[in-house]
Amino acid sequence: MVRKTLIAGNWKMNGLSEDGQALAKGVALEAKKAARKDCEFLICPPFTLLGLAKKAIKGSRVMLGAQDCHFAEKGAHTGDISPVMLKDAGCQYVIVGHSERRTDHYESDELVQKKATAAIAAGLKVIICIGETEAERDAGKTIDICTAQINGSVPECSTAQNTVIAYEPVWAIGTGRTPTTAEVEDVHAAIRKVIGKKLGRANANKMRILYGGSMKPSNAKELLALPDVDGGLIGGASLKVADFMAIAEASKQ
Image (cartoon, helix red, strand yellow):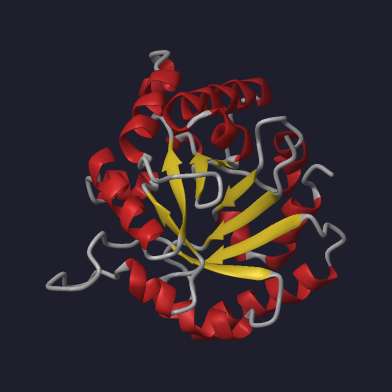
């Protein structure tokens, strides 16, 4: 099954107007020149930069996404942003369930599923993040944790067309550490099996599973060459145009 590579940049809480706009323009320009025509590009700036980023990437191959959303369409939710607002702002994707949201904001699988359901209903595609902590990894619970998070976080309305899964081992995010390629492939293959049981084999075969957790130009080629790795959710390396594009160019043909 051939799945189109997705290279997604999660800018996290980084960027002011000038440098954010420059970064978005730089990615759009380099994506236009990129040799890989079968690769999709996505940037997910903070909410404050969505409008500027939308203008900067207009007419390019680069898509726009947000880093989180609320599950309600509107109402008394001070400081939150709804999926329909993101759609109205020009977003095509939204990330939900990132480990930093799960940890810093105590988000449960149930809440992540509600957000994903609302985002899909609003016409957005969702990137649902899963992954184990270092303690869970050391205890040999990686597959169990990922299985539980998929079953709890992925809604029944998810399909290969509206949902992407991002496996991000929590202990590897921003640390420079990564699992071995064999470990990554084992987890991704297991994730695909769980998706098959939950959503059917057809969806599992077509659904993209990204790797996140200190992916960078130096290790991207070997990670993206793995059969069940369909792209990357890039953190720190997405803040530099050259690094982000180098990862994209390293992806499998």
